[in-house]
Length: 105
Image 1 (tube, rainbow, N blue to C red):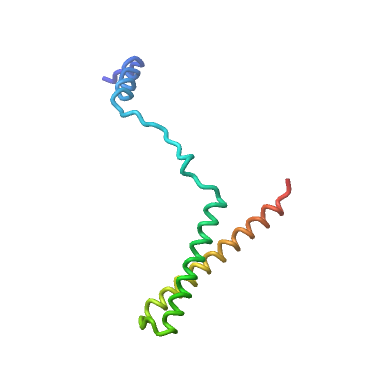
Image 2: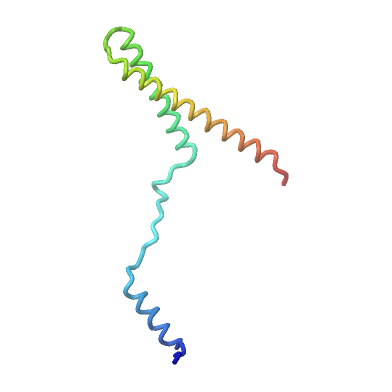
């Protein structure tokens, strides 16, 4: 036979579950958050450092201070890819700005 559902029994089970489950604390990380301009500035500085490192390795290779062509080529490729990524991000930001500016309010 089918038994009916008792509301008091359900409430007791919910209360038991709430008491046995660990309490979770909501943590906000406001002090660790960076603004968009800070993130963008850090990214640009990182790309600049990558390009400077690549230039330094090329100069060392040309001066004969190192004979490891692989490291020079890898650093040049890393700098190129970083710069290309930055240009594409800039293009997307400009495209988004233009799209928002064309929206009618």
